[in-house]
Amino acid sequence: MGNLKGLTTKRLLPDSLQRLLPRRFDRWKIHSKIVLPCLAMTIFLNTLYGIFWGRFSFKRSKFIISKPVAVYSILVGSSFAVYYVLQVYEEFNSGRITSRDTIKIYCYMNVCICLLNYVTQWAITGPVVRFQNSVPLFPVANELDVSMMMVWRALLHCGLKMMVCPLIVYVTLVLYQHRAHPDMEWTIIASIRTMLPLIISNQVNNCFFGGLVIANLIVAGINRRIRCIVSEANMLQTPLQMALQKPYYRMQRFCELADSLDELALKYVVTASCSKGYLRFTDWSMIVSMVMNLIGITVGFYNQYLAIADYYINEEEPYDLYQAIVHLVFLSVPFMELILVSRISSQMLQETKTTGDILQRIDLQHADVRFKQVVDSFWLQVSTLDYKLMPLGLLELNSSLVNTVFSAVTGFLLILIQSDLTLRFSLK
Image (cartoon, rainbow, N blue to C red; front, side, top):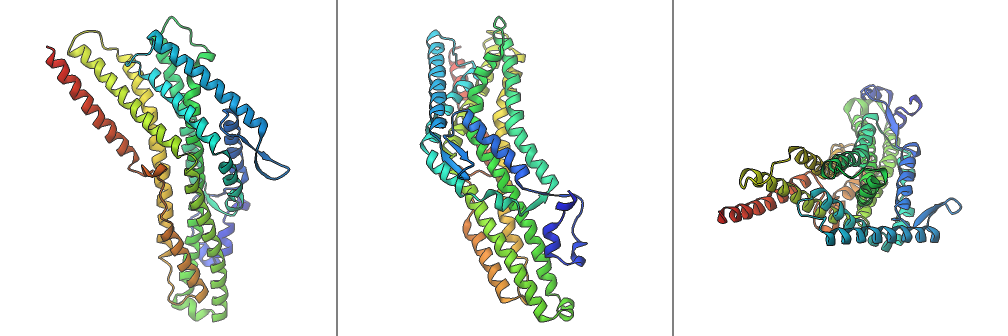
């Protein structure tokens, strides 16, 4: 780690200013050792689940559409659709699906999301491949460094979203199966059959989530570099520095700072535009997933209300507290995923706004003409980019996302509960 520490800072700042920088955390490069394994794992899972028709050609050094992979994906998607559609049809005809079975309803709703993901992702394979080839991910990431704390936080968010949430769902399903169907043996095949729709339905959203995490780290690295440039630019314009340094030296330093700031402006525009551009490939999956989660959470809490009302009002059947706790844990997973998406989106929006705020701190009174032009151009790009994440233009991904979903669930529950109570007391 010692050879990676402060490379960019040492090039930009004099020794006197380097002593003012915080040294609490080491710096990590966002290079191929971090990004490449995550990218390879994502492409492998997309190919394994039959979502992505492309592959990386080492001979051409770019992504291409592969016919064998396309045939494999069609077989996987068709087999998935036939198996689960027939299973839903059989359980519906036999009456094994009831409105009180929250977990089974939620699992089968995710089957619909999987089918939508297969159709939409297959239809946009060409644009996705062209987009992947146009993103300069490694050239941008290799030249930036971020704090080790931010890297660990990003890995923690990804681990929660892609590993902890499915693990909670799996444990909840095992507990539910043993309680609801104690006569049936819970085997590995049964667990895979139940978990597969939940995993595949989240795969496309996980791709966007991982891309947004990487974009957030890159923009954070850009902002750190800009802060160093702002510190030196303002220091060069102090009366003491202007008296000690010759005009030629100051002009040379301002030109070097302008070159660095110009490169950062290009990286910022590429990162922001690519993170926004990738949303159009996942917006349908994201919106439908939110709608299904909204319906599933509403149905789950309404079923809990019905169980309580049947016990305390109608005195029909005993209230199963164990089953209620299992359902609540299961329903908490969609909320946890929404919180993670809302948190990362908010951090990305905050970082993009921070870039403009940092640029406004630059004192341009005695700066070089070219440096003034670069700062004005960079700030104009930041202000006109209007960075927002709005899938299908319907719902903005920010800190208010959880409140919006919670308000919708609460509103629907109030309507349903009021209607049910009116019906119950009218029959007495």
